[in-house]
Amino acid sequence: MSERMFAIIGSELNVKPKQVQAAVELLDEGNTVPFIARYRKEVTGELQDEQLRTIEERIKYLRNLETRRQEIIASITEQEKMTDELMKSLEAATKLQELEDLYLPYRPKKRTRAMIARERGLEPLADMILNDTVTAGDPLEIAKDFVTEEVPTPEDAIQGASDIVAEIVSDSADFRAYLRKKMWNEGFIQAELTGDEEIQQQFLQYAEYAEPVRQMPSHRILAVNRGEKLGALKLALTVPGDTYVTYMVQKLEKNPKSIFADYKAAAVADAYKRLIFPALERDIRNELTENADEQAIKVFGVNLKNLLLQPPLAGHVIMGLDPGYRTGCKMAIIDQQGNVLDYGAYYLTNSEKLRKEAQKVLADKIRKFKVTLLSIGNGTASYETEQFASTMIGEEKLDCHYIITNEAGASVYSASKLAIDELPDLDVTIRGAVSIARRVQDPLAESVKIDPKSIGVGQYQHDVNQKQLTHTLDQVVETVVNHVGVELNTASPAILQHI
Image (cartoon, rainbow, N blue to C red; front, side, top):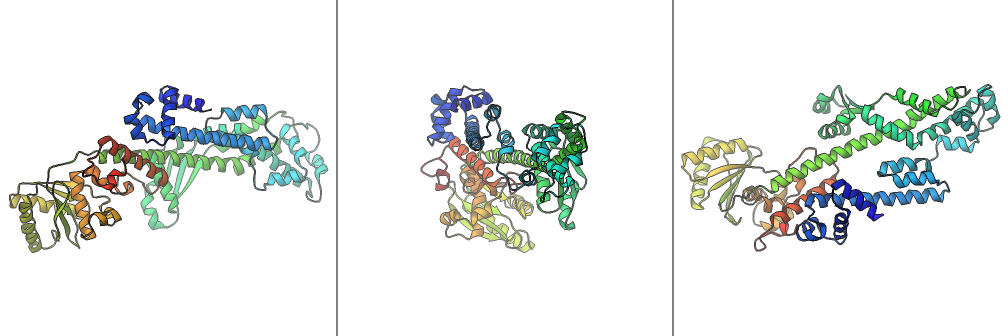
C-alpha cells in the first residue's frame, strides 16, 4: 500500500516514487524538512523544501485515507453486507469524501423515519414503489395489506414506504457524486442582510450578493462567512433543484406504467429536499471554507517569509520611535549589536513648546550616541512623528535619516515573558520602541520573537483554521531561519529554537 502512495505523490510532483519513499522515511525518523533539504540531498535526489513540504502533507492525507478505508471495510464486513463491487469501489476511492459517500448506506444512523417504517414491515411496499413492479390496481388498495395497529391507514403505509425509498435514494453514492459536481458547477452562494443594523453596516456590499460557487475567491468566502458568524448575513446555496429531482426520477424509472410512479416521484423529491440537499450544501460550504482557509494561509506564509527575509540594515546605531498621542512617543536607542543605550518618552505632537523641547533633547542624544538611523513605527501618530523627524533632521543638521517600520506585534512582544526576560529593567512601553529599532537592524532575529499571527501579514487571520495557520507559519519561520542561518555566539534563544 505504501508503494501505491509513493507512486501517487510521485506522479503529482513529477518525481520518482523512490525519491518520495526516501523523503517519507527520513520524515518518519523525525528529521525536519530544512535538515533533509540541506543535508540529505543525496538521499532524496535533490528534493527542494516545497516538494518536501508537499510530500509531508500528502503522505499524511493518504495515510488517513487508508486508515479510514480499512475502518469502513471492517464495519461493512462485520455487518455481512460487503460485495465484490462495493469492495472494488472502496479500494478505488482516492478522496475521503468518496469513501464517506460509499459508506453512507451502511453507517450506523440515529433512529430515522425509514428505520421505523422498516420495523413496521413496510419494506416490501417500498420495493414495489422503488422497483415499479406493480402496473395494475389501486395503490391504496394494495397498501391496505400493510395496515396494522402501528400503521392505521393505507395512506400511512404509503408514507412509511416512501420514507424508506427516500432514504435509499439519499444513500446512493452515485447520486451524491453526480449532484455534488452539478451543484459545484451550477450553484450560487447568495447573501442577504439580517439581524442588527449596526453590524450590517460592515457588510452592506453583500446586500444583494450572489456569485457562482466555482468562481468565489477565497477572501470573499471568508468575508461572507464572517458576516454569517456575526449574524449580519444569511447565506444560502441556490441550485436548480427541480432539474436534479427530474434527473433522479428518470434514472430510477424501470416501468413508466407503474401505479406507484407518482408516489416514487414524491419520495425522490422528499429525498432531495429533506436529506440530499442539506447534506451537500453543508459539504460544499465546508469545502469552500477549507479551500479559502488554505489559500489565505498560503498568503500568510508567503507574506511572512518576505517579511522575515527583509535584508538587515547592519552597522547602524538606531533610535526606535514608537509614536503615540496621549502617553507620548516612546524612544529607545540601540547600538550595532542591539544593546539598549538610552530610552525615554517625549511629546512630539502636543504643544509647540513641548515639541521644541523634545527636538533639542533628541537631537542631543542623536549626536551623543552617533545615531545614524531613526526607525519610526507605523501605528497611531506615525505621520506626525515622521514630520517631526524630518523637521528635526533638517533644522538640527543631523547626519542621519529615518525609515518607517511595520510595528505590528510590538505591543504583543513588549508584554511577553520573553521581552521581560530580555529587558527586565524597562517599562513595557519602552520595550516596544526597542523592538521597533531592532526590527530594522535584524528583521529575522527580532520577528521570530513574536507570534507570527500577531505580525499582521494577512487578512482574516482569526477566521481561518487556527491550528493549520499556526502549523504553516511555524514551518515558514523554521524554513527561513535554517535558510539564512544564525550566528551562534550572538543568537537569542528565540531564534535558536527554530534550528
